[in-house]
Figure 1: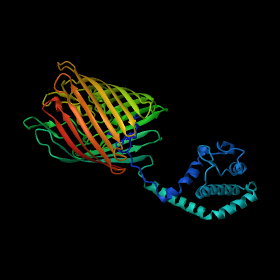
Figure 2: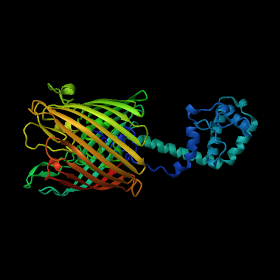
Figure 3: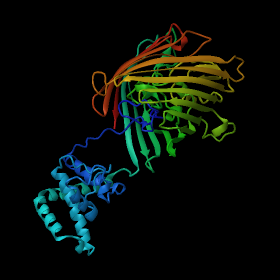
Figure 4: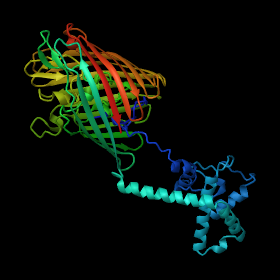
Length: 549
């Protein structure tokens, strides 16, 4: 599933783009920024611009007239004309400029001189020595003597880089695949239950293999392991009645509980033309792998650098369903895009009444408007069917239920986002939602959503259930220090309108970025009227450390 899923891609410590999410953002763990300020790289930086880029076949200059910034009235026009058209050894830059009005470094000049020497040697080897003028050879000879030290150093450095490149090619994992990872260590406790929950130290590890075969497609295979268990829920007498499903945190997602390794997401993204993106998950697909969530900086696709809880990251309408299927976005990268998606949680089951089309499924249609980097709004509709009572985990996104009251101890109960229904034949769901985010500046953004759910338990003898959810989040990127994030969130998890109290979820966090690869996030989650019961609250404190590599 996703950065729960990027995604991903990305980003690494914060999700800064408010445009529809890219594949890199969907990866929960992006590759860390690498320090390339080595002596070799620094010295050859301008040479790389002049030689490696300038000598690209796409940008080859064959006539001095192709330079946009060179005119016949320039004093060096004739000399440049000879170098370009006679010897073809000064080719300018990829943008068709010569940049003759700025100072030339000795390194750049050495690179150009080296190119001319190579060209003259080619002409001589090809028995076209008559083409090379004697005075030109004398000039080049003097230049060669003058810049002997630079040319020798240049060749030595290039040789060293070639050796280093060859070593990397031999030792690299793959020419088409990069490996990224995320490790979460979390110390957390729950304080408000009538019975006692103990403080715990839990982990979740993700390794993501991201492959590209054309430069535009993306094959993602992710391995996950963890030991995170949910806190216990107790009745008023202090007796344990089950897991505390509300306010589950992102590292609870697909943790497995015993650090066993599994493939929790395998999917393929590829484009059709310029503005159509196709998504095909083989396992662990989620609606928000492709559909933009318009959720702002608190969204990290269940990774360890955004909000603490699953509920605070995005509209819960995106948690309806998971599994295998396909999706397509028309207008990808444009201000207005349309996304359609189908997922089946029983796609791998060949039994009668199951499979890709006859079992549990969810289907999404979404229109997203993102005219700039500041504003994004998504209008979402989901139709879903949960068949029977055995698909609860898969139907709610393959995660522990993050919100809503579960009916504990009711036989043949079907769970939708924690809302219990007695319907052994399954549940039909129709849901509509509006999500939006606005970035007022680079240091402040606001996001929110409202969603309506209509649930109909088949042959349960009950009327359909209406449920609502709405929320507001404030995020302050770079608060106190670049890379930090202050987040404040308050919302109402999906709740039944026919019973109980309205639950309220409040969350605060402050992510402290220690460096490019490590962040520490203290935070608190407070759920009032947990389970729509006025006498039950949940209070969870967390100290989360996230390593990305």
